[in-house]
Image (cartoon, rainbow, N blue to C red; front, side, top):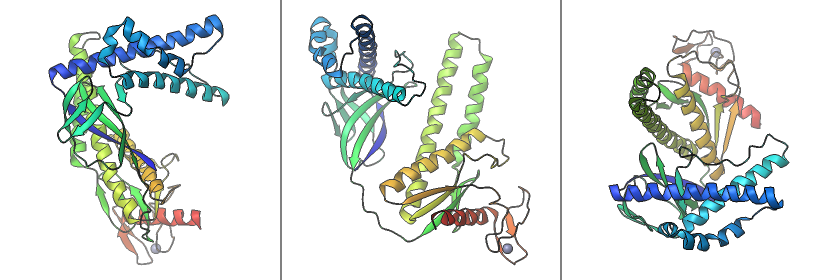
Length: 362
Ligand SMILES: [Zn+2]
C-alpha cells in the first residue's frame, strides 16, 4: 500500500470562501489554545496532556463557544492530532540528540489548511461536498485512483485547493528488463541514454520572465505600503503557479521512466562540481531537476524498481563508446571521438551516467 496525494483547484462562491476562511481562523485559534494549554499544564503540574484528553474536551468547548459548532467535528479533532504530531516529532528529534525546535504557535501565514479525516466530504462530479461549508465547485483534472482517506482544504495565496490523500495498491508492475541513464539539461529537462528528449516546457520559461518582472515590482514599492502588499501577493501567486507547472512536468516524465525501465540512473545533484555554467534561472531549473528525481524515486519504490544516483564528474567529456576523454566546450553540442563514435552530447553523457549506475549495482 502507498499513499498518493491529489491536489485540485476549488472555486468556492464568495459565501463559501468566507466560511473556509472562518474555519481556518477557528482551527488556528484551537491549535494555539491547545498548545498553550499543554505548555501551562506542564509548567504548573509537570504533567503532559494527551491528545485524548484534549479531544474529550471538544464537546465542552462547543458548549462554551457555540461558534465551534460551525466546524465539522472531525476537522476539529484533526487540529488536535496535528498538534500531537508536532509534539511527537519534537520528542523524536530530542531523543536523537538533535536541535529540537519546540512546537510553534501558528501565525496567520503558517496555517493554511484544515482536514476532514474520514467523513464530512464527498466528491460529486464537478462539486465537492464539504460538511458545514457546502457544495464547492472543483476542477478535477485527473482521475483519482485508490481509496480516498482524507480531504484537506487549503487556502494559500488567495487560491483554494482540495488535497485528497489516497491509499493505492502497490502494483506488481511489469518488469521491462530495460535500464536507462538520464542527463539533465536546460532546454531539455531530461535526456535519456537511448535518445529520448524531454523538453523543459516553454510555458515555464514564460513564467520565469513574469516572475522576474514581479520581483522587480516588489522591490520598487515602499515597505509597508498597500501597493507593496499587493505586489508581494502577486509574486507569491506566480511562484505557486510555477511550482504547479513544474510538478506536472515531473509527474509526466517520471511516469514514463518508471513504466519504461527497471533501473533509472540520475546524476547526483548534491555532488559539487557539476555546475553546468548556466546563470539563467539556475535555481528554477535546479529545483525542477531535484523534483524530477524525487518523484521518480518515489514512483519507482512503489513499482518495485530502482533509482540510482551517480557522481556526474566527466560524464559529458568521456566517450561512452571507448572511454577516451574528449574535451569539448559547452557550445559543442556533438560528441565526436577518434574511435569514430558520434553522438549528441547529452545522450553521450546519459550513456556514461547509465554505465556508472550499472557499475554500482554490479
Ligand atoms: Zn570513443
